[in-house]
Image (cartoon, rainbow, N blue to C red; front, side, top):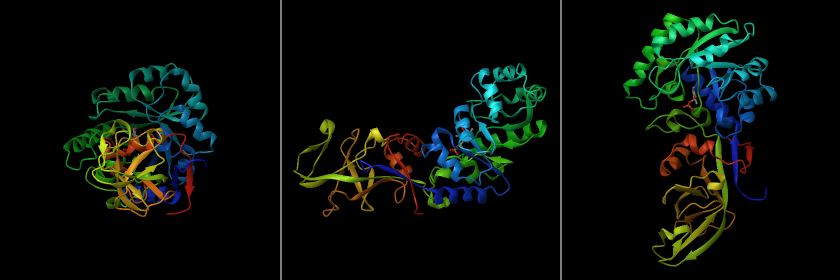
Length: 360
Ligand SMILES: *Cc1c(COP(=O)(O)O)cnc(C)c1O
């Protein structure tokens, strides 16, 4: 390793979080969501570690094929379905199942002559208004799919838009709408994402689809990971690479927005937006130096950030720094940067080595 930046990954935490899914949704099978390279943790590593999951959800056939090539035999579902009919032979060859969210995909299946080769999930739009069939078209879409020679089993899927807010009535409405249609159409049902699993018992049906909670991040507004018994899987770490005493009035970093209010020690940490640390993290964003919080100061550069070391006068070059993870929830860093934990995890750059750590 030639630069001290690394993303340490805890297999124990990942398995623990799957255990939390099982205890929230005891009767459900778990489709572990591993799109976007396992939310930035590494697709293969996550899937191999979660050998107790009942299946995996991905965003493309490429991701599904990578999982098969890594030896994963569990069901794999394409959450956005296929993007063109030319993918169908590959999807069948690799034994992937697919969401069907659009009329065009039904036509492609009607014109595809695989014999009972495909499990499909009919996606219904119960209020997210992104993908899926209007509830009024759902029964017709289901019969057309059941009539396709290529279709083996048909399940029903929908996605919750506001489940992160326990007080938002949209979710109650979405669940009711979904159940009504499921009663009419039949088949296995899947509705809950992480927030549904945690906060909406009626959304825990035959299959649940946890993503962010598996990685130890709270899916809820106003509730932290510890309240939900989740443990962070990734800890993004680095080291202090320089310390200097700056005089009162000296600006720090690009643009010189941040000016030292007094003589003070300023530390430079090897991490930047080139590693996926958010460039919009504002002054005051917490950073752990030697396990204690110090504020970020100045603008985030490509390879470096600067921190205020006034509370740590004895800090030294080489001291350990944590940007998020163990001891510092990624949600908190995200809030300081005007984004969400999901985005920070997905954006950890490929130049950052992922290292499995033995720890908790
Ligand atoms: C990404 C995704 C999920 C997982 O959502 P989380 O909020 O990360 O739990 C579930 N279902 C679908 C269809 C998704 O695209």
